[in-house]
Image (tube, rainbow, N blue to C red; front, side, top):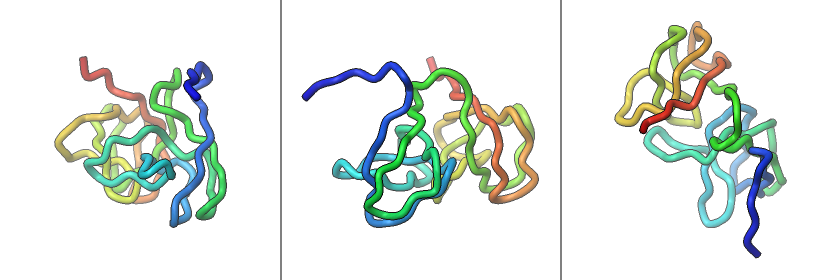
Length: 118
């Protein structure tokens, strides 16, 4: 059945591996999995969750900013790309976000804004 989403939040079933809060995620065969470095993510995981459970995703179409996990030290204002393990980094091929906070190291949680590529 077709539907629309106006809240920017949507629930999905997690695939074979657990997910962590603020990881970038994608859909594979209808299941939610962590997004890799060049994968197009659908959003960010809203909480820590085990495989097979249902979790809310903050879709990239949601209004406002997002929390993301840095893979390295990042300066506020840096252009950000998708990184391995659902994180963000300062190098890549397609700019996806702008850092609104600084990250001191791998694993830091920062605020990011979706970058308008138009």
